[in-house]
Length: 277
Image (cartoon, rainbow, N blue to C red):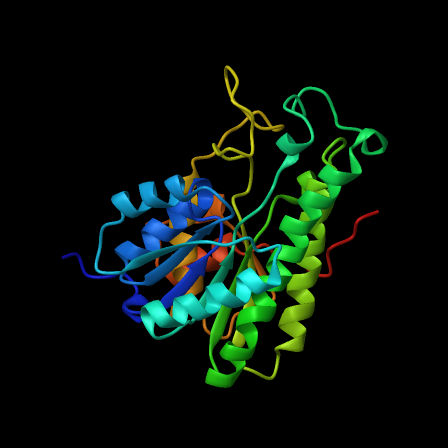
């Protein structure tokens, strides 16, 4: 058995929402390989979760649950299921999200103008990307505060995407998530619970983009979802203790470096941002 690069991750319990595919799948598998016990969720597709279950390899354990983060009762149940499965809960990765494909399959080539967007589709994206992370954090944070330890990692997007023409409501939903992250970090300042943001740093090869020939993001590039593996290990491990209200860009992470140096290189020094206008 390969020794975990982060000993503190052994038997550390983590919830990864939206862990059945894409970024969530890669983060969950990396954590399990490092020795963490991981609960992954999907809103309705159990087959995806079972496929990850078949791939999971390592000293860590995997549990699966159908749970919709837009439903607070589901989030409370998920917390309790995780505690029952592993006997502990130390970290939350708010990864589940809905993208612009819900509005249009051609959003990458034909901008989705906000005044033509179906209000029901707008609401669904906001419920998943804004209310979902709040519900999950609301469900687990009292437990984190009581045990005097916890890590919340919110998965975001690039600043350009937040204000890109035709990317509403997805872009603004991630703007809200980052503002929420900063507020939560301030609210938790006198505790040992931290809140940070992690983003790929560009379009990734996930289901958020429509399948098409020469699949690429708006910047012409396409990142592999596995770029999230190294930074999520650091963010869930003791090495990140004391770091809060920080923003990390996965594509800037250099795995060959010392983890602390890699984290410094990947940290987005945005100062007093966000400045939206």
